[in-house]
Length: 105
Image (tube, rainbow, N blue to C red):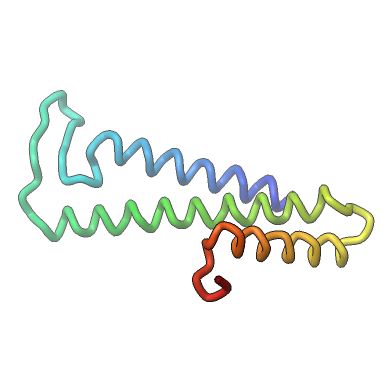
């Protein structure tokens, strides 16, 4: 099932990004040899921060896709048309109620 694969890939990317961030790889701090050294080259640090952002964002997209497809499958498994419309409307309503979508609020 592609929903479960998306969830797995998303959590793997998110956990990997969080682990590397906690090790200081994306902050410009190298903790791999038991000592803390700060990397002074800003281009490397900036590249690492952008890489961290991309990994975590991609993980979030995969998790969102997995949950969305899984909810489509679990709400009305016999009628995918009604299920997809219902989950779409509930997602928009939730975004409006939480003010997560400025264009809809």
